[in-house]
Image (cartoon, rainbow over all chains, first blue to last red):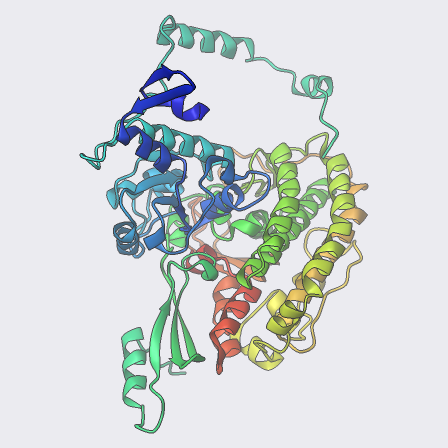
Length: 220
Length: 387
């Protein structure tokens, strides 16, 4: 029970012959929810291939995070990974699917199209500029399409959100996890200065020389 | 020639009233747009009599993003990256089609290095596309193992793309006048290794799935598409070749360096799902042998002959170029006014759009289970249908 005792606020009473733990029911339920998300197989375009790579295929195995049970029916799913562009004709169907899913339901928007319209943001008469115009989105995963690792990062973020958010009494209110917070003794200006320094240093590169100097991996 | 146009509502109404009291009730059922066996958001209206499919009506537009319209507002170089998102499993061949159209119109002579790189990349793409199809076909028919095998081997090819191009799926690599960047120093070695690794894997695929009795029963003599019907529907690619028509643009009208390599066009005889399966498996083998012939002989030379920043204006008039993607003939048609660097009209003749209508011909009077096999054996990519 390493994970449970680490994450949940608990009180452990030592007793002869062992110990017992007191904790909040909300924490236990959220922990269980976060580690057994059932995604809906919803893919409209290119991002669906990378999502299939992430969920089904052997190299990037999403089962490690407990979210591999992809269900074709929205009734059995509680996570919808919107993979691909949403157009005006698909929008009502997406809304219906979302409403058919079991509560509490979570949404990950993958790819540029579902965040803002992506490559189809200008001059397209059908694209919905961002899936959050149709349904509420919990986590955005950028990329065109995002790598499976990026999707995993999004999933882990969602799990953090679930673990530290919503209570059973007040469903639907989720705390956003602060993943991008800076460490206490680092300021944004320092980072900018470092980046500037790196840019100036890298501004003149002899590409051929660098290429020859590098050792390339030889294995498959 | 008069064409009768009917809406979906009319087609459903007409058949309802035709029922006689003695017949069993025919009814309509929706398959999709959210259905795992339709490879995306294809919606099929099925006219059923019990479990027998009487008619399949594809209903399109659930991923229509208006790519052709966006193309009218973008330059040719900008349009290349939109074609990646149409048929994302043959992304580089789509890029190539646009580049071919521009080069043909401007009469740009390419050097051998560019042609070699393009051809090798296109064949790699074809292999990974067919591997994915193979895995998904297995999954559609109820076997999950092929999915794991196909995706495992496809990842290796994706790695090669990533090393050279920096992208796994939507490459935007082949551009008018050449390719985006030179190949990675490790490219040749790695391709050889992957081919060496994947060759015996194809035999493993065959052992795993092809010889299986269930797969044979599900595919043999199912969804027969005759050569006449296939030609009249405008079907192209492996679906057409499986029906016995040896139309392969790589052979009939060679582009790239296809005229310098030896390969055979896989042709089926019956036109059933099994032939389509076999044709694709054979195409993987042929592609591998093509790459083997080319990979050692990539000549030296520049990789980009047109200045990317320069305004590209095509001569006034209409321009067309076509090539063979993993799914069939992709044609790009553009009309230029001779002044602007943007086309007045751009149109894509996409292979999937024509292929999807053959699902009706294949499935008529067979069972719902056969429909899944048929749709899977056509190997459709829905964003390419709707564009």
